Image 1 (cartoon, rainbow, N blue to C red):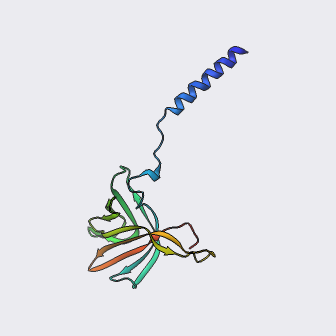
Image 2: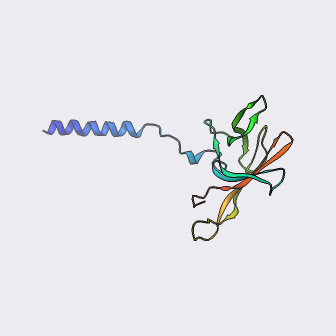
Length: 157
């Protein structure tokens, strides 16, 4: 009986050491571009703020390489200039992490402001809360498409 207990104890210790030495997956919130990434509630205007064409949820994600590259998931709002019948699901951009700005081949004047806008959850009786705000522009066939809004707060729409 003591031999079985000893063998079982040694097996558990070896397993514990082996598992604790495994490399852990990186925490997604430790990405270099974490201040840019996430779900954003954006209003989309053409040429000037106030000419709203749509409002919705958009995602900005980092790339697998965990560098300054980000992807703006734009819900197929734009067509591919090379193939106008094909919609573009996302646009690449490069983040300037220190200045909280970003730009790309088709993305201009991108800016994130931490705690930049006051948001009042409408479905809840709650005080206004401060949320990160965002702004960027995308020129498209002579029009200037303006995206502006705030990071999704997790509160009701």
